[in-house]
Length: 70
Image (cartoon, rainbow, N blue to C red; front, top):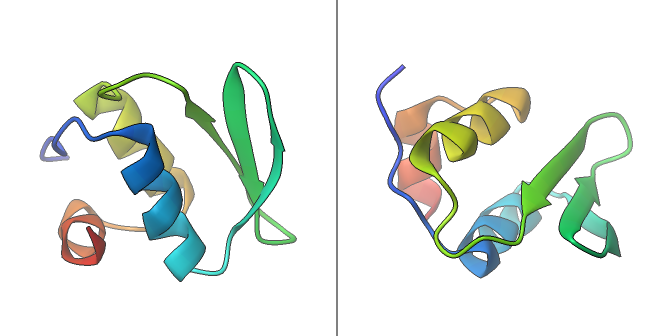
């Protein structure tokens, strides 16, 4: 999988909100859910590119699809 850019956690939340995910709770991590899939986004700035790729893959996005939503 090609690497995704290391992005700010707020930008990651914004991308997943476009896909219908809602913030379920926040603490050291941000937990987002769309009812069937739960994503856990760390509060790092920037989020590691490999970690961001794994989160996007869990959401069912290819790296190109994720980049298009940024």
